[in-house]
Length: 476
Image 1 (tube, rainbow, N blue to C red):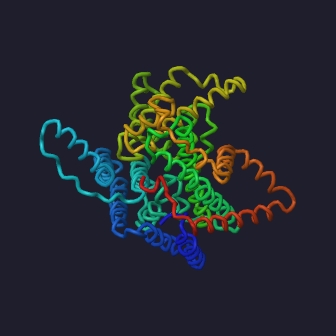
Image 2: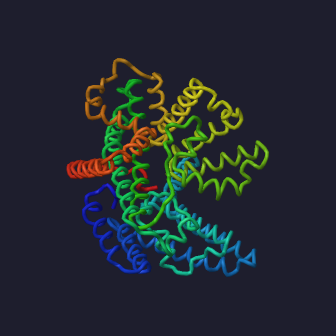
Image 3: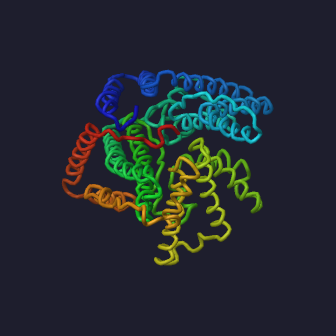
């Protein structure tokens, strides 16, 4: 089940909110939210919920044991290592096993050996998100045994809470621990939550889906018929799709969290206004960036070591960042692509040029958008070969004017152009600042609420007629 579906909007969400607020005490509300979240996760494929439940049980036991033996460091380290091995083992089997066997078979073919049989392993939805949350819990318990959760249902709610379950943000237990016990419920907080949810839904349904249909069309046609201009249209459309798809989902998650009393951390902060790749990663998928920084980069030594070791640490982090997103060499290259430019920025100390003047800032902004956009080609492509062909078309290499087809009239409809303008504006803080000023105007709040209702109605109409409603991060 996804947030941008009629089933969720018309049935699951209103029923869940109604029952939640009817229940009198926080413990009953927590228990209900846990079972509602498990139902939400099991929708469509009930078997996969048992993987998550098993993971919750193992990490619950690991946390208890780590806290119990915290004075005996060797024992607690061994338990921690075992829990991390378990979590990575689950993630490897369900997400990377087929990829691993397929590459082993390629190697075996060179040796003229019979290939291993590749069995179909069903990928549990959002396994990367809830596995990282579980690992952060046991690691934090090892660092501070006082935060251990002895109530398995409360720990289960932390892992399975449906607003952030299948696409984040990646929540750390120490950030939400007190909220699981007691949290604030108010009309104002719920109103802010509904507002945030509607905005996120609109970003997903109106902008991301429209841009996605353009990107899918261009990436799906014969490369030989694609000219340079259309190739750039395709990857720019995908750049908008992935941002509004993922940030829209994060907005909906944060909004739903507020409706149920939770304050989830922000996950995006206008990444396309960045003036360096380093800044981009402080604004893009913030929860993942912080996770790798705190649980991988800093433990490896971070930037407190020599330059060569720091570059090695960055390489490891961005290899992991790429592979986290999917079992394909294209994701690995995408991660290394970003890591390479961050290393270049550190070597050249590019940050000292930021803020010098408008011209320098503009050049840095163009540079960042260029690197990010080219990187998205690898993220979107199904193979390295396809990515290479597409990048060649973008820069006019390998293009035959005889075969090029003009797709402009098909793609550049008035609707698409309006959505592109909206995408550009909403990629910046302009509308947010205008909205804040408008709310202080007389009757501004009432007008804003009316517009939000109309926006929700428009999303309903689009969803009721649309057959195209993908979600990029659904299987991450």
